[in-house]
Amino acid sequence: SKAKEIIVPFEMEWTLNDAQFFVPQRLPKDSYRWQFVEDVMRKESAAYGFKEIRTPVFEHTELFARGVGQTTDVVQKEMYTFDTKGGESVTLRPEGTAGAARAVLEHGLVNDSLPIKASYFVSCYRYEKPQAGRLREFHQFGLECYGTQSPVADAELICAAQSIFDRLGIKQLRLEINSIGCPTCRAEYHKALKEYFYGYKDELCETCNSRLEKNPMRILDCKSPVCSKIAQGAPKITDYLCDEFIEHFASVQKYLDAAGVEYTVNPTIVRGLDYYTKTVFEFVTDFIGAQGTVCGGGRYDGLIEELGGKHLPSLGFAMGIERLLMLMDKQGIEIPKPSTCDLYVAVMGESASLKSFEIIKAVRSCGLIAETDVVGRGLRAQMKYADKIGAKFSMVLGDNEIEQGKAVIKNMSSGEQTEIVLDDTFAEKFMVLQLADVDSFKL
Ligand code: ATP
Ligand code: MG
Image (cartoon, rainbow, N blue to C red; front, side, top):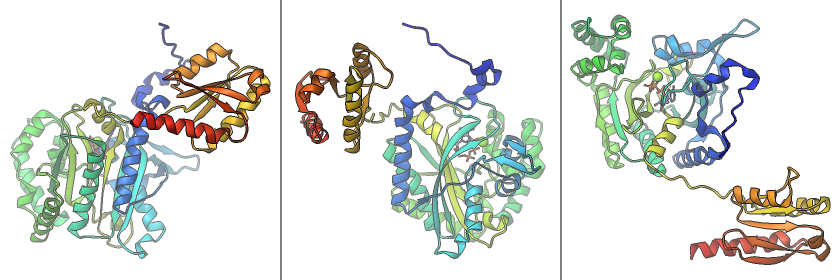
């Protein structure tokens, strides 16, 4: 077998780090995998009434600083921030919510009928340490729901995520939920947390030590084994919630029960972003190593106000598409491979090539996939290519066939041969042949 030739463009060193951004799963031969996943996400969320939104890949840095929150890891350490030629500071989006929220505000959608339900696919950029399941460029699918404070919306959002995972055939995904109240009830809780964690000051990691004063809740989110062990004994937010939030959280659970969605209440789930209030949740798996959270979300009632709008209770989630694909791979979930070529027309000579152009155009307009030689290969090499791309049928066109006005179509798997006239009924007749073959598969 031939050694694979790998070319580093212009011998530039940065391409050697490509793996940080570019995972093999994004190549054309694998596209059916992410297209399948995205298709399920699109259809399933449409069934819940969400419509797609597309937002810019970069925004003013200020938007993320306010929307994601100054004290978050994302804003403090992970953003790709640049100055433009005009001297403005812009940032490649690290997540999808802030951009969607800006669109809602700037287009006055808050004056339409509420809630506003939006879905999105975005590429995200975070300057993190690259590792399995943690890339510097990755993709998220997310849902946003603006303008409702009802716990029914929280439950519906979680159900939508669960439906997507079910449709994808994913198993053994834990849903963990929590309520983190609002800034008011959190103040009392922060005090209790600080007191508790100060007792372990010397054991906590450096980052957590710096979190002690400003944002002790983040310590609950720390991935270091020592910190997470200590966090297990920490006071629980649920003991500090105001009555209103206790009721809200209980109601969310009641609706989840009604929908038959299984969950556990995990008081250490706090989410990484500042704007969260009340309900927070994560879908977690043990199948893909340390980066096991495939979906995170919750309520962010203060976000729209923080961005200059009126008070508009809102919620949403985001799931990592690369992590999901990894998980499906690990669980051996087979993704249906779509047909790659229905008809390959091999040609000999220019007049045959011209005729094939006509024929495959008609075949393609019937919704089938057809290819002919665009390289200038000899007949044998063309047939080898047809085999390689998995063509279901092939046909050879030469001067003879054109003279006689008919050609032989070969079923590549059964070897069966059928003659078809090369007139304007060709595509129709090929269609019938092709359908008969599909039917014989079913029988
Ligand atoms: P983590 O705790 O893993 O850093 P996070 O809290 O930063 O996650 P979110 O901002 O909530 O993650 O993003 C939602 C989802 O996007 C995550 O659950 C994960 O599936 C995915 N995700 C986040 N960061 C990355 C990354 N660097 N590479 C790949 N996927 C990611
Ligand atoms: Mg993170």
